[in-house]
Image 1: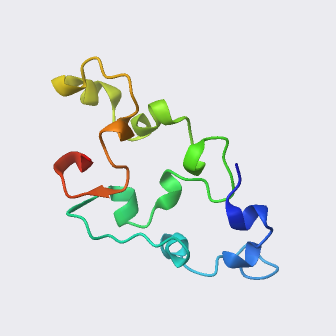
Image 2: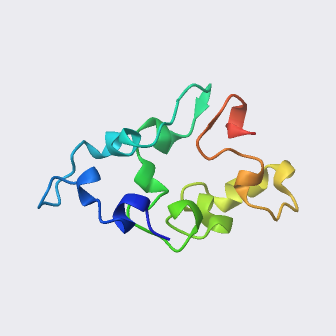
Length: 113
């Protein structure tokens, strides 16, 4: 799966013509096209800092939503699986973290949906 502008060879949507230089600072670039209203009480750290690329590939990915890795274990790149497992509410959970948690923001603690 490729990011739409990349697939359409619209490199100038993100890069200065003829260069690899970005048209905006990387922490503002995605918000140039993607309207993400940060109007919730709790905002996931990467989103708050403009770090979309922590989770998403800017050009393309073989994973849904242009994620950098497979979704089932994705959150454990930053959140330690053993620490998450200590919370008894997670016992026996087999679905993805995003079944209960919003990956971007929420009005509920722990980004619960």
